[in-house]
Image: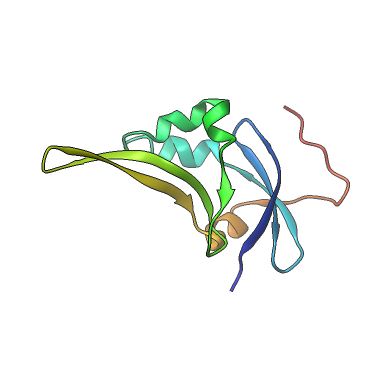
Length: 103
């Protein structure tokens, strides 16, 4: 089972991740954000300070805490927004060990 073990670098909408198989890959998150903009709160990830709060979750997923806002019985609830490690691996590009992200 593939897992993200470390987020090595983050810039606007891009994450360089190390996976448990030793591969280092770059994921462009902007298309994912655009595809999920119907979820109330995901657009907050367009803010660098919010985007940079990313972390690796318990199951090797990429997580932003309390991003998606929903309402249930009149009460506002906030849910984590995550990207599965399998999706991140399959939709990212291999990065050479001596990489630099161009902003």
